[in-house]
Image (cartoon, rainbow, N blue to C red; front, side):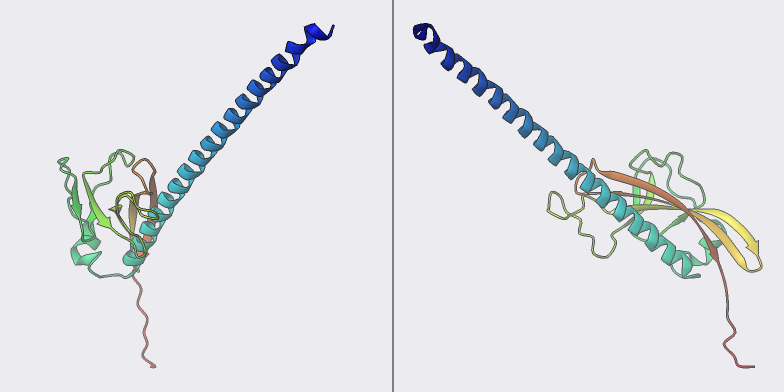
Length: 185
Protein backbone atom coordinates (compact mmCIF):
# COMPACT_ATOMS: atom_id res chain seq x y z
CA UNK A 1 0.00 0.00 0.00
CA UNK A 2 2.79 2.47 0.68
CA UNK A 3 4.14 2.21 -2.86
CA UNK A 4 0.87 3.53 -4.33
CA UNK A 5 0.62 6.44 -1.87
CA UNK A 6 4.02 8.08 -2.60
CA UNK A 7 2.83 10.21 -5.54
CA UNK A 8 -0.53 11.03 -3.94
CA UNK A 9 0.96 13.45 -1.37
CA UNK A 10 2.84 15.30 -4.12
CA UNK A 11 -0.30 15.69 -6.25
CA UNK A 12 -2.38 16.93 -3.27
CA UNK A 13 0.39 19.41 -2.37
CA UNK A 14 0.54 20.74 -5.93
CA UNK A 15 -3.26 21.16 -6.07
CA UNK A 16 -3.17 22.96 -2.73
CA UNK A 17 -0.35 25.23 -4.02
CA UNK A 18 -2.34 26.07 -7.18
CA UNK A 19 -5.44 26.93 -5.07
CA UNK A 20 -3.41 29.15 -2.74
CA UNK A 21 -1.78 30.91 -5.72
CA UNK A 22 -5.16 31.60 -7.31
CA UNK A 23 -6.52 32.96 -4.01
CA UNK A 24 -3.49 35.25 -3.76
CA UNK A 25 -4.00 36.52 -7.30
CA UNK A 26 -7.71 37.20 -6.70
CA UNK A 27 -6.96 39.01 -3.43
CA UNK A 28 -4.29 41.15 -5.10
CA UNK A 29 -6.58 42.01 -8.00
CA UNK A 30 -9.34 42.97 -5.52
CA UNK A 31 -6.89 45.19 -3.64
CA UNK A 32 -5.82 46.88 -6.88
CA UNK A 33 -9.46 47.48 -7.82
CA UNK A 34 -10.14 48.97 -4.36
CA UNK A 35 -7.19 51.33 -4.78
CA UNK A 36 -8.47 52.49 -8.18
CA UNK A 37 -11.97 53.08 -6.79
CA UNK A 38 -10.59 55.03 -3.83
CA UNK A 39 -8.45 57.18 -6.15
CA UNK A 40 -11.42 57.90 -8.42
CA UNK A 41 -13.58 58.80 -5.41
CA UNK A 42 -10.84 61.13 -4.13
CA UNK A 43 -10.55 62.93 -7.47
CA UNK A 44 -14.33 63.26 -7.82
CA UNK A 45 -14.50 64.71 -4.29
CA UNK A 46 -11.73 67.17 -5.15
CA UNK A 47 -13.61 68.22 -8.30
CA UNK A 48 -16.81 68.74 -6.28
CA UNK A 49 -14.93 70.77 -3.65
CA UNK A 50 -13.38 72.98 -6.35
CA UNK A 51 -16.81 73.52 -7.96
CA UNK A 52 -18.32 74.42 -4.57
CA UNK A 53 -15.48 76.89 -3.99
CA UNK A 54 -16.30 78.47 -7.35
CA UNK A 55 -19.97 78.79 -6.31
CA UNK A 56 -18.96 80.38 -3.01
CA UNK A 57 -16.72 82.87 -4.84
CA UNK A 58 -19.54 83.92 -7.16
CA UNK A 59 -21.92 84.28 -4.21
CA UNK A 60 -19.38 86.55 -2.53
CA UNK A 61 -18.89 88.68 -5.66
CA UNK A 62 -22.63 88.95 -6.30
CA UNK A 63 -23.14 90.05 -2.71
CA UNK A 64 -20.74 92.95 -3.16
CA UNK A 65 -23.36 94.93 -5.06
CA UNK A 66 -22.31 97.35 -7.77
CA UNK A 67 -18.76 96.11 -8.32
CA UNK A 68 -16.76 95.03 -11.34
CA UNK A 69 -18.40 91.59 -11.34
CA UNK A 70 -21.97 92.81 -11.58
CA UNK A 71 -21.25 96.20 -13.09
CA UNK A 72 -23.91 98.85 -13.64
CA UNK A 73 -25.08 97.39 -16.98
CA UNK A 74 -24.99 93.70 -16.05
CA UNK A 75 -27.23 94.19 -12.99
CA UNK A 76 -30.13 95.16 -15.24
CA UNK A 77 -29.97 92.52 -17.95
CA UNK A 78 -26.64 90.74 -18.31
CA UNK A 79 -24.78 90.66 -21.62
CA UNK A 80 -25.04 88.47 -24.69
CA UNK A 81 -22.45 85.74 -24.25
CA UNK A 82 -20.65 83.96 -27.06
CA UNK A 83 -22.78 81.19 -28.53
CA UNK A 84 -20.91 80.37 -31.71
CA UNK A 85 -19.09 77.31 -30.39
CA UNK A 86 -15.73 79.04 -30.18
CA UNK A 87 -15.32 78.08 -26.50
CA UNK A 88 -14.57 81.63 -25.46
CA UNK A 89 -13.14 81.75 -21.95
CA UNK A 90 -13.07 85.07 -20.14
CA UNK A 91 -10.67 85.84 -17.32
CA UNK A 92 -12.92 88.64 -16.07
CA UNK A 93 -16.31 87.73 -14.60
CA UNK A 94 -19.26 87.92 -16.98
CA UNK A 95 -23.00 87.75 -16.35
CA UNK A 96 -24.94 86.41 -19.32
CA UNK A 97 -28.53 87.17 -20.33
CA UNK A 98 -29.34 83.62 -21.48
CA UNK A 99 -29.10 80.28 -19.69
CA UNK A 100 -26.87 77.39 -20.69
CA UNK A 101 -28.71 75.06 -23.04
CA UNK A 102 -27.10 71.93 -21.59
CA UNK A 103 -24.78 72.42 -18.58
CA UNK A 104 -23.52 68.82 -18.65
CA UNK A 105 -22.18 69.12 -22.21
CA UNK A 106 -18.60 70.30 -21.85
CA UNK A 107 -16.83 72.49 -22.78
CA UNK A 108 -19.27 75.39 -22.70
CA UNK A 109 -19.33 77.99 -25.46
CA UNK A 110 -18.81 80.86 -23.05
CA UNK A 111 -17.62 80.93 -19.44
CA UNK A 112 -15.43 82.67 -16.90
CA UNK A 113 -12.21 80.81 -16.13
CA UNK A 114 -11.38 81.17 -12.44
CA UNK A 115 -8.70 79.75 -10.18
CA UNK A 116 -9.79 79.81 -6.51
CA UNK A 117 -7.19 80.69 -3.88
CA UNK A 118 -5.12 77.67 -2.90
CA UNK A 119 -5.91 75.77 -6.10
CA UNK A 120 -2.90 74.82 -8.23
CA UNK A 121 -3.54 73.94 -11.86
CA UNK A 122 -0.95 71.75 -13.58
CA UNK A 123 -0.98 68.57 -15.61
CA UNK A 124 -0.12 65.32 -13.82
CA UNK A 125 1.07 66.74 -10.53
CA UNK A 126 0.34 65.45 -7.06
CA UNK A 127 -2.37 67.53 -5.36
CA UNK A 128 -2.87 69.50 -8.59
CA UNK A 129 -6.05 70.16 -10.55
CA UNK A 130 -6.19 69.47 -14.27
CA UNK A 131 -7.98 72.74 -15.17
CA UNK A 132 -9.38 75.97 -13.80
CA UNK A 133 -12.88 76.23 -12.41
CA UNK A 134 -15.28 77.37 -15.14
CA UNK A 135 -18.24 79.57 -14.19
CA UNK A 136 -21.36 80.50 -16.15
CA UNK A 137 -23.54 83.15 -14.47
CA UNK A 138 -27.00 83.81 -15.88
CA UNK A 139 -29.07 86.88 -14.91
CA UNK A 140 -32.58 85.48 -14.38
CA UNK A 141 -34.18 88.86 -13.79
CA UNK A 142 -35.25 91.23 -11.05
CA UNK A 143 -37.57 89.97 -8.33
CA UNK A 144 -38.55 93.27 -6.70
CA UNK A 145 -37.82 96.99 -6.87
CA UNK A 146 -38.12 97.95 -3.20
CA UNK A 147 -35.55 96.93 -2.13
CA UNK A 148 -34.03 96.08 -5.50
CA UNK A 149 -33.26 92.38 -5.89
CA UNK A 150 -32.45 89.95 -8.68
CA UNK A 151 -31.93 86.23 -9.24
CA UNK A 152 -28.78 84.72 -10.70
CA UNK A 153 -28.31 81.13 -11.80
CA UNK A 154 -24.69 80.07 -11.39
CA UNK A 155 -23.32 76.90 -12.98
CA UNK A 156 -19.78 75.79 -12.19
CA UNK A 157 -17.68 72.98 -13.57
CA UNK A 158 -14.41 71.81 -12.06
CA UNK A 159 -12.03 68.93 -12.56
CA UNK A 160 -9.99 66.96 -10.07
CA UNK A 161 -6.47 65.77 -10.79
CA UNK A 162 -7.51 64.28 -14.13
CA UNK A 163 -9.96 65.13 -16.88
CA UNK A 164 -12.27 62.21 -16.12
CA UNK A 165 -13.12 63.47 -12.62
CA UNK A 166 -15.45 66.35 -13.47
CA UNK A 167 -18.18 67.92 -11.35
CA UNK A 168 -20.93 70.27 -12.56
CA UNK A 169 -22.95 72.10 -9.89
CA UNK A 170 -25.69 74.67 -10.21
CA UNK A 171 -27.25 77.11 -7.76
CA UNK A 172 -29.60 80.09 -7.77
CA UNK A 173 -28.73 83.19 -5.73
CA UNK A 174 -30.97 86.07 -4.80
CA UNK A 175 -29.11 89.34 -4.42
CA UNK A 176 -30.80 92.21 -2.60
CA UNK A 177 -29.43 95.74 -2.56
CA UNK A 178 -29.63 97.25 0.91
CA UNK A 179 -28.52 100.47 2.50
CA UNK A 180 -28.10 101.46 6.11
CA UNK A 181 -28.35 105.01 7.49
CA UNK A 182 -25.35 105.38 9.75
CA UNK A 183 -26.22 108.98 10.58
CA UNK A 184 -27.21 109.54 14.15
CA UNK A 185 -30.17 111.69 13.55
